[in-house]
Length: 512
Ligand code: AMP
Image 1 (cartoon, rainbow, N blue to C red):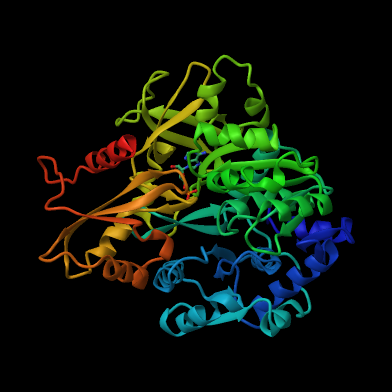
Image 2 (image 1 turned 30 degrees about the vertical axis):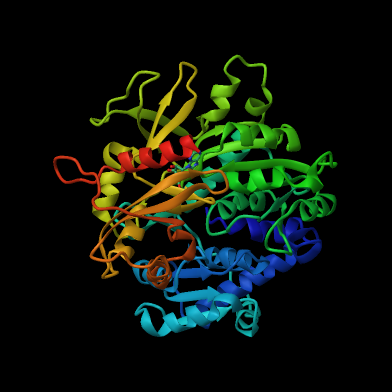
């Protein structure tokens, strides 16, 4: 089934009900959205010459047009490549080239960078600005019928950085995304056309994925007018769009929970806050439960198995009298309905309850593979199981707790940062002989990026190192702290002992 079926269907059935909203204003009803999607799909085919299976990248901040583009791409049988709009131009260029993107849809904010890439990335033929006359021309094309898609056809290339430092496109099929949506209804919440979903986090990531079950059921997708949600805006939106749910990284939940405007406020319009993507400290979770009541659900997933490995339901959060409540809410919950989850040793043998091993997942939501990366795909999906790179253990009741990440990933402010990427950039600086990048616990950001630098001669200035980073990678990836050292700790094989560096930082934090 083609996921764009939902929009086409609601265009007839829910006709005048709101489909997209910006703040309190309706941007499009379902009939309008369905017409724009079918028109744009025809335009992508007839005016831009795209054929089913071709890739269309979306480089836009969250805005209602984002969903017009996404569903038009699917309606035409094309493959969407939603790109994190905060990436550096060179990083965007890499993703466009790797995915073989032919057309990029972008907004005014990103147009300068993206338009420059049309000339430099060989596969890219055109860019279209949405909103704008170019997008209006496409949506105004006489509509075309929905293009058939088989369950295993690619729908979304979800770019995720790997340990190799280069991002890889997890190929998510129509079946994968349908499964992820259905399991939302099974494990998180039922959804109706009277509900709403707020896009407070990037649509290229969690918020886009959680939007799917809401579109499936005809709920309205709401975009905060400010672009940066605070308590007062949330209250106004709850009044206008009751039955509201949204996805947020733990850092955002923490900020909102402490917002004075929300203390003692009427939150009856708030249905669910789905948080995940990074660990949440117990104290923060307790504060969030105090502010929001039993409206929190946690999910643990990754791009390779979109939003779906385990979950901790609203009921689990509310069950405070349970003897193991504290342990449970510090973990990531119970396997989702549509997947098998195991914890295995290095030989892929399941380990007993309580023992730490790698989390592996199998089911219809697991990606088809990495886009044109057969070796990485074979390695990650070996034996038919997705190897997540996360280390965890299950308890006797089957609840999973994550212990560490075997992939060295740093999650800062809800954004994933792979140390290798930052290290490679810093090594371009002539004043850097060696470098190791690790995460340090940070009360504000979850984790902060710290670089241990062995200088080649006189230590370079921090400003210089910062510039080297921002010249090549997104600003949010640059280290918050540089430590100049004579040497990096290594083992017998010369491998840098990052654990030791992390421990050093943890001791300092502890001492403070
Ligand atoms: P991404 O593919 O960008 O969504 O990143 C996925 C990674 O984020 C996972 O492999 C985990 O390491 C981490 N992660 C996701 N959800 C959670 C969670 N609820 N708690 C702790 N870590 C998480």
